[in-house]
Image (cartoon, rainbow, N blue to C red; front, top):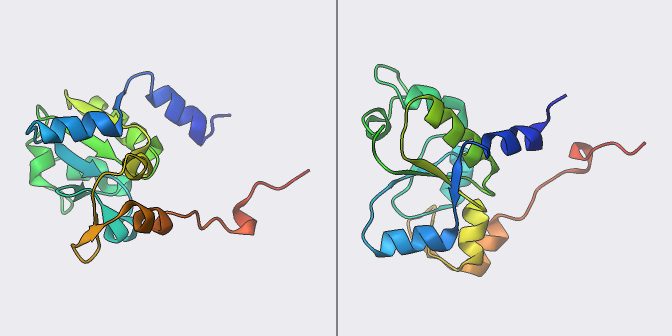
Length: 155
């Protein structure tokens, strides 16, 4: 039986990843990739990379195509553009990048370590109110909210 981590590992056999310092360098050199954040809207509202767009994984495929309520023109027209897919830790972004490759996107990568790695590298983030957010405040927003009933039962 496949599980989440094995699906991610499989996707990573096809998806290229970049590290936060690679993205920081690219942006510093003037590159303008589509920064695609595939976290849920509530996660994005807490904090995100400046100039990123939010398209949750659940509507990704429709967002990449014309003629859907979820269509995001920058994506539907951007199959040749450089796309950096972002999530919290780099797992959802790997799965999303894999789907985008299947859909014909030719220059898509996943941000390894996700927003958490971006924070660890002490890069700027935007808070929900549009203001800046320092690494400590950002890190506090990403503390796991795992509940006891969500843990694997012990045998």
